Image 1 (tube, rainbow, N blue to C red):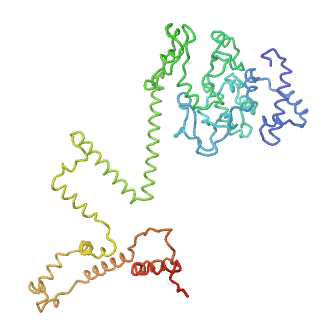
Image 2: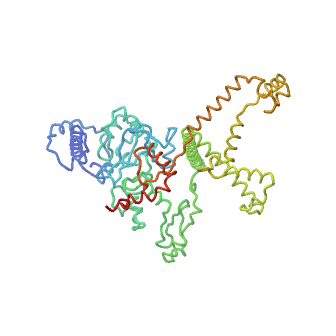
Image 3: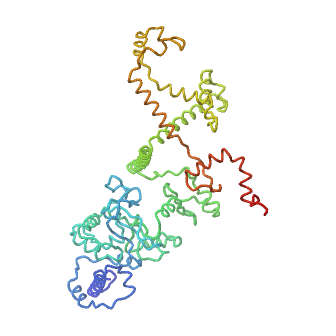
Length: 518
């Protein structure tokens, strides 16, 4: 690479050969270039390479650090594509990334909208999708982009296509119209992720993030040629793991004056006395109770306000979902829903009464001692109505017959005007006559409307008797002695009438003891 003293022409030829080879695989079958390069190819690319080398675009050359980052990754770390449904959830971190979202529901990615995913090292697929507007362009990506804000959009698009199958994938599968929002997003340098002091392409133990190395690591980071971003998501590590690490990150004191970092606390030096303790005492001394953790610590007023608004949005979304569920229950089964609401209201009222009694020093189990005579009479009357279901001959008892008569007479409509007219027409003596009076039943005419009401009531009772039925419990282990439901019902009647007398005969027939000896 020219940044490391390489020859400009040789680098241009190598870059042109690589681009031609990558384009060859892309045009052939659209498969994964990184997968096919491992299998090898016998296709001739000499002519395409000469043409590409002769017409190479030298207006923009990605830096050495871009290629160093690409060489470290076996597969492209990021993928851009159009959302295939409306079910994708935006996984952008809260704060400086999430507030860039312009949609009504920032947690859902609309179908057909550009989304960015990160490589999952365990599954080999892409996940943790985010809105394009919520995506912070990682340093690995923007190190391969033109850094001149005045560069045309075509230069940014060419740079993105050049890194397809290197650090990015899915760009060649998108149309120019679909890539336009992505190009516009990466052109805005305010969307680029910030950087911190870690030399790109260095060994895992190098740099200021290494546990060992101390001041040497810090000096080495300052001397590095480039840096990676401070808020770029690591593809190999899930988001939940990063949050747990950030919440629980503490550094032990390796010596006097070592730096100790606590969640939500400013960075400062540990006292010399703490550095002299053993590891166990130092860890116990530096431990912070969970209840003292403030999620808004370190935020400015604007960020704290956005955080509070996000919490309110979450509460509103949950309330809306609950309301939708309640509406669905109400529409599907209105009667059951009404019963459930009445029960909830009754239980809530009973709970409030019990709480009031507790405040007054009264045992809720002895609440009947506080009832008045009128309340007790109403309660006893309700309990009497809940008598045991009548079975067998009890159905035609005097009590049940009276209740049936009382229920039917409640539906009778009394017309006082017709009553007085009838009384004046036939006379008071004939009107109140008993069977011993000769005029009994011989005077007065019943109105046709009253006859119609009586006929309608009789028809209603007939319909109720036909509809009267209750589900009987079915016993699978019972002997099958029927051929259909009607025959089973008939056999039950026979069993009720003669079962006690025929029990022994049936048993003898089953055992074979009822047969004669000869």
